[in-house]
Length: 347
Image 1 (cartoon, rainbow, N blue to C red):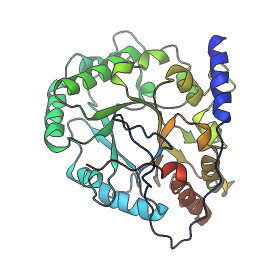
Image 2: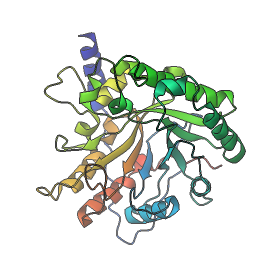
Image 3: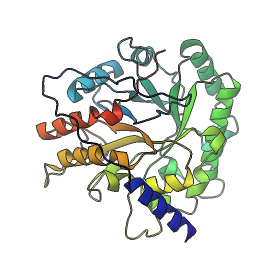
């Protein structure tokens, strides 16, 4: 009961955030826009007002990251503050191309690096040091090549990889131990510029599992908390995206409400979000992007919004410009003053 009351209060407080008047609609010939230098950024990359605008660009298209970013930014008519990239195993990051994006003299970008340290070792094995050589090699690379601050999430969306059986090495507690070990090992080896992100799936069916709370690695190794919700058939607007619920899981209040209660002092990132095509409702994407613009200020703890742009995401097409009306609404969202009040710090 206490949890329900606390979450209700948080939700009510969030709903009182005023929505500012919309900006003028840009024309098709309006040049790319960047951020206005109005607000400040903390050492943990938290903007003092508004939120970062980010994208995982043209995923599964075969384009390299520089081409994908250039194409996506041209398509949406706005610059990205955050570029979301993915690495696995022994890959060293950031790559030269990712570093060039981060150090773009005209428009520097923050990197959100998504790393799975191993695909063939269990979380328990990693926590016991099975890939320490890989972590140490990465630490050497980061110290030598990239001293700038960046976001680092480790094995994002762990919920559907949990095996609760004793001795599996893939229990929720094993995940927390793995995350802690990787972060502390990197710090021990001199990596001080990684802003760490714990990324949940954002789905209520996993959040009600008895082991769900055991996934969290601890405040000392987590700087931001994140969710990866997608607009499936149960979602009708931004509010129902970040606070997904289901009738069969009455006890689950929604991720944003839970994060407000569970992590009141931490910034929230929507590290992946996407809107699928609805053949029976071709106007849905446009309407959804408009809802984000009108509702985002009701969720002040959200400090970064990172779109997953792909023609072949696992459950459908999340490109934002499949129709001209959707593209226009997405451009208006990307250019909204809420996402243009803070500049990415220059290297």
